[in-house]
Image 1 (tube, helix red, strand yellow):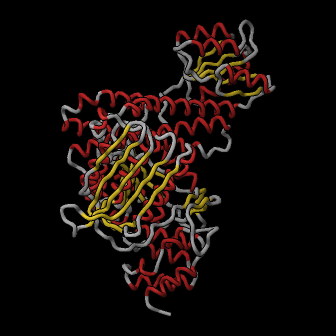
Image 2 (image 1 turned 135 degrees about the vertical axis):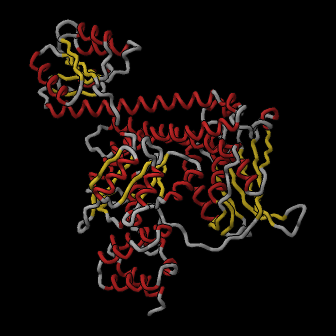
Image 3 (image 1 turned 180 degrees about the vertical axis):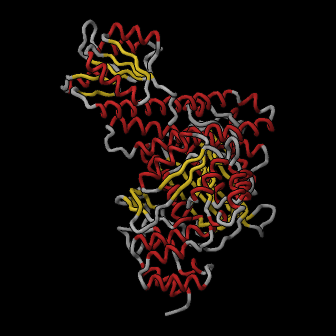
Length: 626
């Protein structure tokens, strides 16, 4: 987190000794100190120079600390200053009274200097994160307000939003990332955890809004392309049903998702775009329907103009309030909402325009019919292309790493990032686990440190002064040793063009801001074979072989998944598993290509869980041995 050079702390206490001790402690920590010996003097100081935080005694001559705090909180110019009470009053009623006056914390005398310093830093950090989130929310509201003017210059707006992708997502990276780190602190009170939850949820909501705006700008600029793959449609529909089931149940709605028998299990189209369309329309239906039901129906139909050609027909029907004839012609226009949408004060008015463009890109068209007080029906067709059966994706596993498994080398990790708060986020994620973390503030420093220290892996920001991440990556990869050093790009951009440029520069992988701790650690395990020690895991999904304790590796790996690996490597993996040689297996996993990183990670999970028997079985079957 990036504080100013000297945060200002006002200490209010009528005891000279307390003033001296606390002033010395905080001044030595780099804070600017203001002092007042009574409430009246404190109010005068606050009017002249607004502090960043106030430490206040309760029992003082004249007006006491409670009344002083009340007056500060009544003033619109000072009401947001965090106030921490310091007092010998230890009764619960006194603490409740202090918090009801607007204080954020309560330190009981006699106090420890270390405790005072820790609480001051903690509340300054929380105040900083809250301020930044409010600033970003204000910035987003301004963005939406100015949208009509920006529509007149589509090309200019597209360039502007590309920059906003970086400018908005970068501070969100710090806000959401540090919120994740702070949630680890077992000393947080329930109230503080609730505040953190608000910060995280608000940040995630802001990120979703930003992503919608960026997606629309890409559509208008013609930058959206299809990524057609074969996927399991029935599994997608099931996951969407699970996503909305709780919300529908909480409103007393019947949610029904029906796929007719003739609908193939696997189809070929853009899975991400189809999923987003269904989520957008179903989400709206559940949001605006108060009683009755919401239904999604999927069936196969013949094209009217060509009976020999089949189509997938999707219908989303609700029993909500309906859309008026005057509004139904405008709901697909960007940034336009129907009356109910405006009243709900939610979203950007982009969900339906994005859905229409996605369906059009996939070869279909969305139609809508509605009757006021009866409900609304959305339908769309897509060309039916049957896909090949595929292995199900790994079931997500939620486990928080708490350290590195023993018997591993000391991993040196270089973080190249110009933003102090973003560097600190990665440092605070990685150092407590046992990684040695090196820091560089620009690409040139990163190249110099790489030559001096030879890190095992580099996290490389792209947009930096002096030398950007593209050039730094090219220079490192141009050396013999650098070819084998994994470089993972960090970027706040949401545009595919930058991702293509990142890989063209030589980066081995990519992580999009805001960063998620689980993604960071997973990528490091994939590229370095790092093994972690985990907290008691919280699993999601089920495994037929072990319903109570499913493992990601046992769910996802099949013998045919190893077919693309060199036969010699498979033989060596088999021999290492028979010998129960974990270190040899991790060394062999480094030979797996980057595009097969999930396979390496799955095998690594098996080793971490001591399932050498599964590795033996997989490698035996892959080589046709018995």
